[in-house]
Length: 437
Image (cartoon, rainbow, N blue to C red; front, side):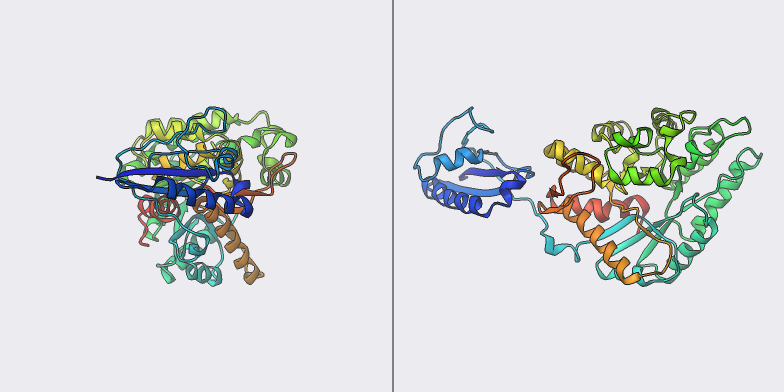
C-alpha cells in the first residue's frame, strides 16, 4: 500500500477572496509536490477554506508560515509560533474526498421548503418553485385569522398539484375548557389527515395567548392537551411545534441581536414578552416543551424555528442527545446561525454535520395575496438561494441584518458536504413527513 502525504491549507474568508494570495499559494503547492513526490509516496496538496473539515490526516499551515517557507526544498518542520502548529505526518491511510456543491448547482439540487405559508389559490409561485426543484410544504397556523381559508387552500392545492406541494394541518384551541375539548381537536386532526395533511402544527398562542377561566396562561404541557399528544404519538403523526419565541422576545429592543426580531416585536408588541412580565418566562416556555418531549418520547416532534433555542446551538445539541425523535427546522432563524458562525465557524459546521439527520430547511416566508407575483418569485428565489449557498458553499453571501455595531454585510458559507446539504434541504423532510418527492 502506498503512503500518502496530505497537505491541506485552511484559509479564512478574507484569504479565500484574495486572488493574489491564492496565486502565491498555488506556486507553493507546486513546489510541495515536486519536493515530496518520490517512489512509494503520493504527494497531495489542496487549498481549502477554513470551514473545511477534512476526512484525512490533516496538515495545517498558517498563511504567514506558508509564505515564509515558499521556494524552500524542505518543509518537514515543527513550529509552535504560528496560528496552527506545523506538522507533516506520513501515514498509511485510505481516503476519498468529500463531494461538495458549487453555486451553479442550486437550481438542480433537490430542495424542500418545509416551513412555507401558501395561503392563496393561485399556482404561479408553486409552479415557479417546482421549476427550480423546490417542493413546498405549507404550514397551517392557528393564529392571525383565516383558519378555515388556510385549510381550504392547502387541501385544494394538494389535490390539484400533488407532486408540487404538501401541507401541515392544525387545530383551533378556541374551545379550551369545554368537556369535549380534546375530542373536538382530535376530530379536527382527523379531518386534516383525511385531506392529505402530513402532520399537525401547534402555535405559540399556546403558552403566550391562551388562558383558562381564571386568567392563567395555558402551557403546552397542560393536562387538557394530554389526550391529543397521546393520539399523535400513538398514530405516529408528526408534530410541528412553534412553542415560545426567540430569546430576543424577552429582551429590550437595544439588547436584541437580530434586526428582524427587533422589527417584528415593534410591529407586534402583543408578542414582545419583555413588555408583558406577567406572562410565562422564556425558561417556562422551554420547560413546558421539554416536558412534552419527556412525556411523549416516541412523538415525532419538530421544533419550529430551531425549537426556540436559536441563540445557542449547544442547547439544541443537548435536546438532540436526550430526545431521539426531536428534530428542528431552520425557519426564520438563519441569522442566529450566522451570528454563531461569526463567533465560531468550526463549531457551527460540526453541529450541522453531527446532527445532519435532525435538521430540516424552512424559510417561514409565504404568500397571502396575489400582488406583484413576478417580483415575489424573485424574492423567494433570492431567499432560497442565499440560504442554500450559506450551507452548501463557502461563497461570501449577504449576511442577515444583525442588531449590532459594525455588523458584517457578508458572511462565508459553511460548505457542508453534499450529502449533508441534501438531507437538510430535502431528505430529512421526506423522511419525517413521509413526502413523496
